[in-house]
Image (tube, rainbow, N blue to C red):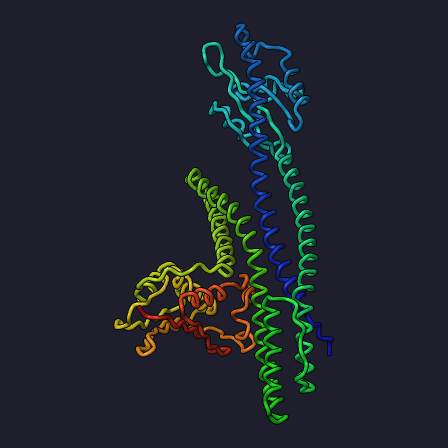
Length: 496
């Protein structure tokens, strides 16, 4: 038998917080890397255009004296000065309209014909801009600037190129710096969190649990816990002391006393678990605010960039459109994760209104993609009274539960949605049942805990959002499940 490793509250909360920080820093590094690469490439391209325009200006001055470009001599020296003076520039040349290299910083290439298709297309277009060319297995960003003669006719183009690898290498340097900085930030945060939890959470909880355990074993109800704080832990210790004082005043048998102590101990342990859950949500809330701010802005920029690219590249090839759709979908998935993260710790006050259940469910189903292998059965009586809830929040509740039901049936099945009304209690209960794989009892016990999930993807916040939003609207949520027999979620809400 292997040794069982015990993981305490401090370690669990620290691991959760470190994981969230790693996720946040990882996403930030990736998005920053992407943004930096684009910005750096744009800057270098603008620089090469400016350099090319300077070289063109020198040609324009010579042309003003009536000298034809093909009659010039020694202009390759100006091309050589460009390469020497500006770091990162690989070559500078003047190319005739027929593709012949008239001047080049490498004189050996003068008189040769340009063979790169991208440069030839730019010569044909006679337009100013940046093209990507290939030469001897390496790619270059090339700034193309057309040159006009005395009568305004096109005579040649100035081409200034720098390697794409320059952008890639600089981006890699920035990514390494971001990873190192992120790792240092995580280490600092974890150490600070460990110290905080040790002083303010685990040590007081350890004393309380130790006293409770001693009372349970010895039935010594004279034991007390010292209280030093006025927070939830202090309130818990005060409640424990009050319970012990009440027990001392009662005259019960030893067996009855042991029974009551065990019952109260169980209640205290439940309170302790709730406190731990609140601690998780509190830490999660601190991280969520930073994560939401740091991620939503770059995600919004990326989403706008994809929309712009899809607009300007409407006639692009199928592969390009496919990759743009992939990026768009992944951005949308990241935005949903950020929204779930924020919704799980910051439930907005509901704005209740009269809402028809049938219309609300049909609206929710209309916004979801249900696989053809899954049959949806709706049983909503027409006589139901309308609900008095926040329509957007309850829509989110139904959306999360229906999505979970669909994901629980990868091979297809039946999703049943039924509603019943309790007239006396003035409530309506909506049951969402799937015919999927079901859940074991140990999974059910942790189902509504933050960051608990059995899925390959996801961060375990969907059901936390369901519970928070349902309770905020004065309702309750219950679940029943057996392995192999599916799962049923029941949402009970007040009628208008």
